[in-house]
Each structure stands twice: as C-alpha cells, then as structure tokens.
Amino acid sequence: MILAAENLTHIYQRGTVFEKKALDGITMSVPKGAFAGVIGHTGSGKSTLIQHFNALLEPTSGKVWLDGEDLFAADKKKRKRLREKVGLVFQYPEHQLFETTVQKDIAFGPQNMGLSSDEVSRRVAEALEWVGLPKEAAQLSPFELSGGQKRRAAIAGVLAMKPEVLILDEPTAGLDPRGKNEILGQIKKMHESAGNTVILVSHGMDDVARLADIIFVMNNGRIEFSGSPAEVFREADKLAKIGLAVPQVYLLLRELIKRGADLPQNIFTAEAAAQAIKKLYEH
Amino acid sequence: MNIKLTIGQFYPGDSVIHALDARVKLAGTFFFIVSLFYADNFYGYLAAFILLSAVIVLSGVPPRLLLRGIRSILFIIVFAAVFNIFFNPGETVLLEWQFIRISYEGAITAARMVIRLALLITASSVMTLTTSPIQLTDALEYLLKPLKKIKVPTHEIAMMMTIALRFIPTLLEETDKIIKAQTARGADFVTGSIMKRAKNLIPLLVPLFVSAFRRADELAVAMDARCYRGDTGRTKMKVMKLRGRDAAAIIILAAYSVLLWLTKMA
Ligand SMILES: Nc1ncnc2c1ncn2[C@@H]1O[C@H](COP(=O)(O)OP(=O)(O)OP(=O)(O)O)[C@@H](O)[C@H]1O
Ligand SMILES: [Mg+2]
Image (cartoon, rainbow over all chains, first blue to last red):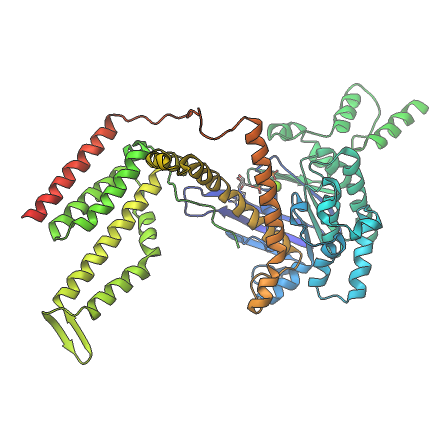
C-alpha cells in the first residue's frame, strides 16, 4: 500500500454556523503502482480527500499513511520530504501559472526540490513532450497560451517533479474531447512506463472505467463502495441512486447480454466492445 | 493553512433584530454610540447596558461571538485603562507606593473608558452580526444620499463596497487554492528571511492579481451587457420599507435618550 486513509474525517469551518462535514470516516487504501479512480458527484468530498494525501489539509480526525509513514505524525521536515513524493494537479491548475515563460513555470517545482539545473532542464523538456506542447511554447509567456495549452503547461509543472504518486483532480474538466483523450492517454502511458501510482478524480465515468484498475465511489463524504471497474459497475442501480452514471459501453453490453448475446461484461472502452461484437459475428 | 471564510461576520437568523430595517439599525447604532459619550454617570451606563442586553437577547446571537469582538480590541481597552489609572494627575490619591500613584479621578476615567469601549464594540458587533453586508451597504447608500447634493458619488461608493464584499470571499478562496497549489509544487511561504519570504510570494501574488483583473474585466462586461449605467433611473429589487417594528425601535431609542438626559439632570 503506498497510500492509505484510516477513519479520515474533515470538518470545514468547525465551530461556526457554516460548519460542514466534508469527509466522514473514510477508510481506503491504494496499492503501489495502481491506477486508481475516484468518482462522486459534485460536493461529495473528492477534492477535500485528495488534499489530505499531500498534507495540504489536516484531518479533523483520522490518519493518512504514505509509504508506510503516518503523514500527520511526521515533523515539518519529514512532512516536506514526504510531500515531494506526491504530485497534486488541482482542479483548474492553469490558475496557478505565474512565471514569465512556460519553461520557467514548469521548472518551479523541480527547482524547489533542489535538483541540478541540468536535471531541471531535462525534466522540463520531458514534461513538455508528455503533455504534448510544442518546443516553441517553452519560451512563450504562459498567459499567451490558449486555455487548453495553459492546462497542459500547468500539468507539466507537476509531472516534471516525477512524483511517486500522481494525483489529478479533474484534469480534463472543460477541455474538448480530443484534448481530453490526449492528456489522459499521456498520463496512462506515463503510468505504464514509469510504474508510478496515479489517482484520477473525475466526473467522467467513461474515462475512469477505461483507465483505472481500482475505483472508489464517493458519496456525501463517505466511500460508498470500491473495487475493480467490473465490480463497481455491477452496482449500476446503486450508482444511479447517488447520481452517477454507468459508462455507456457497459450499459450497451449489459443490454446485449440480457438479450442472449455471448459477450463478456467487463469491457469499458468502445474499441474493445467493437472488437468483441465483431468476434461474435465471425464465429 | 485554511483561511477562514467568514467575512463581515453576518450570523444568519430570523429574530426581530435581524428583521429590522437596516437603515434603522445603522442609524440607531450610530446614535447609541454617540450616546455612550454623552452619558457620564453610572445610571446612564446602566441604561445603555440594559438596552444593549435586551437587543442581544432578542437577536439570538450567541454571546461567544460578541466576546470575540471584544477580544480583538482587548489590547486597546487594557492599554487605555492602564494609561488612565497610572498617569492621570488626579487630586484625590487612592494609593501611593514608590513611583506608582493611583488617583480617584484616574480610576473613574479608566472605568468610564473601558465601559464605553466595551459597549461600543459590542453594539457595532450586534449590528454587523444581524445585518447582511448587502443590506448594510444599501442602508449606507440611503443614509449618505444627502451628500449627493455636494457631488459625492454615493451610489458608486455603495456599489464599490457591494462588489468588494461580494468578491472578498472569492479572492480568499482563490488565495487559499493558489497557496495550496504552489505548496504542492514545493513553494515555501512560511520560512526564510524577510527578503526571501517576500520573493517567495511572487508565485502567489502573480496568479492572484491575474485572476482579480480577469474577474474585474468579466464583471465589467457582464454589467455593461445588462445596461448598467450608474444610478440614474435605477430601482431597487428589495425596496426598503419602514414597518411597525422599525417605528417601535425608534420610539424605544427616543425613550432611552430621554432617560439618559434625566440621569444627567439628576
Ligand atoms: N474551504 C471550504 N470551506 C467550507 N466548506 C468547504 C470548503 N471546501 C469545500 N467545502 C465543502 O465541502 C464539501 C466537499 O467539497 P469538495 O470540494 O471536496 O467536493 P468535490 O467532490 O471535489 O466536488 P466537485 O466535483 O464539485 O469538485 C462541499 O459541500 C463543499 O461545499
Ligand atoms: Mg473538487
């Protein structure tokens, strides 16, 4: 287990009329090298949860374990070191750009880690490529970029730190379908080659189903249930009850199976489904 | 790390005090504060204290919140008291020991000071706790209206205050978010020398200003698109109207001032 939460509770603005229990006794664990998905409707506590994984929010009660160490028992120095292991891409990360050039902005994180300047520029170049920004973009001001490009630059700023655990909070919200697939595809590719742990927070059930190997479903500050995509989507009715949709492909296959087609149910991408259906006809 | 988002300090509720017309509350509080400086004897302060206590009880605001207001100026109160007790060159000496000399007049002035400040802060706290910031600016705009005759842009001032109040929580939220995002990238806002810390603020301030300007721009366009052109011919969505309870409040205040006058006569 690289990351685990134990009975994690978070209450915002405690002791005021605006008190709000955003997390309510969360217990979960993410295996090392996993691609985990966190889904839940608006306000279910996803963003609050992941901010604990980076010690940006302190739990009201409960614990977070990072790589076997109690994150909130660690002293400041150690916590800073532990924090470097976790890269967090916030919702709308483009709002954090500040440098005069894209290159400098991406270099901010690696520099803070105390890396040599050679290593920093190598990582910047690498990160630019990962997110699919052209080399020329490096010298532009981040404020000259388009919205989608800004997003990519901001994500690159975190990727350049090569975190052991990469957490992305709705990285594709507001992007066009192509940009969305490109960015998610790159993240998946990187995950496969580097073997890092990824936690993807998303509304988009289709993306999570396609990419993740373990899914946590959040509702009202709790983990409603969790498991492999196949296990989670079997509970289609429960999901619907808490306002979440099951992937389109899954529903299609379920309908076909119900009508007697000999198809496997654990398929979550349109391509794989097409393949399976094609095979059915070839027999 | 988490910034408190309670601005102004409005405590929502449905008491009589909450329902009072904001203009009456604002003017009434101002009147009450002036009266605190008019009163000069024990019975006068007692009258003020009873009136204020009654308002507090009616408002249903937890006393804890009011104490918080007093705590924030505790230093000033203590300072004023100490200064008056020890440095007032009064005639009637109560206590004299080495260089310390406390006079009767000094003690009285100090007590008066403490009572006045405490009542003043509590009164203004009750008002801001029971009146939403928007109502408050509306009331202010109304009460400042006479100044328009001498070309003071009262509507614009009130509009600016409304917008500022509207955006303070947004900007605080944004600040909180950017601090977190940069911290996640290894930025350090809390340690180091002053120079270093100032420099470390750049990753926070640049995005914050960028977003503030962007929001201002968007808001200007949105207001333009809805034909905002200052207050000429502008009507209010919520027209402020005096009701029975407002009249009652005014009568109570009048009775209070007569009482105050009597205590001074006696
Ligand atoms: N700083 C804060 N102060 C008070 N309440 C907050 C704060 N941040 C979030 N909340 C509340 O906590 C709850 C969970 O919020 P959170 O941002 O974690 O939800 P989310 O699942 O990320 O939603 P979304 O999908 O919209 O991003 C919400 O009800 C929200 O109103
Ligand atoms: Mg969120």
